[in-house]
Image (cartoon, rainbow, N blue to C red; front, side, top):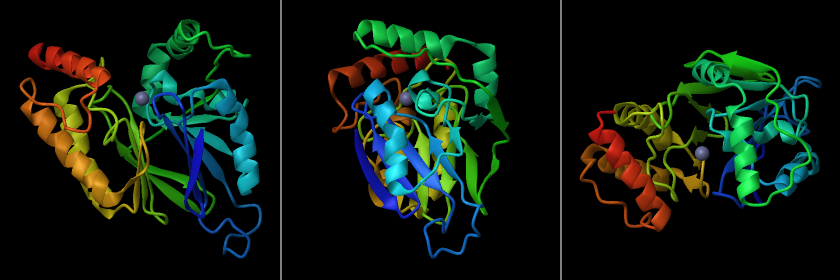
Length: 269
Ligand SMILES: [Zn+2]
């Protein structure tokens, strides 16, 4: 697992599986000498790495940086982003209302899919996944963190649910499964091309204002590179079912995602 610092208050850990990202953010000015009053500092862990050793290491990563987890957030309900509780047992998980609805409608799905992944890859995990207490957040909206606020923006289209998170004081956008340098747009079950395009249009001004964009999968992007990928993705989606894959994303798994996209668009979603 790779861990990099984007800002004094923002760290990103990247999983060895699917380059799934996990962003750790603490309230503005939490470091000593900052303006925050003692006792008002908070820290959220957004999404999660996938492998057991990575999850086991996560509390030590926070501790070494002087961060203390006060809660979990997830960008959407796909299981590979929901594993924070395996690192921070007992922490509450905050999600968009749309994600809470999906998790409530499909109880046990994330845990079952995690088990299937572990079975397929012979991964040993000491405890099963339990999502615990869900906190449903209004989106668009804000989420308080210490004396600061995170901005929450709707991000559906990949799936039926989701949110992107903007950290205003660090100019960092955590966008969930959009604007990925390693994965073409994936229209999953519950998602749609129109929804995906609307989300990209919504994210565009944030991407343009961002110092860094953290995609759900793949390395952290500087704003200008993320804007170029966003334009590629708009172009790809607009041209479906006849679209060509972007040059840097043409491996076999991308062709499989593309074939599924073509089928969904032909079927009218
Ligand atoms: Zn994902």
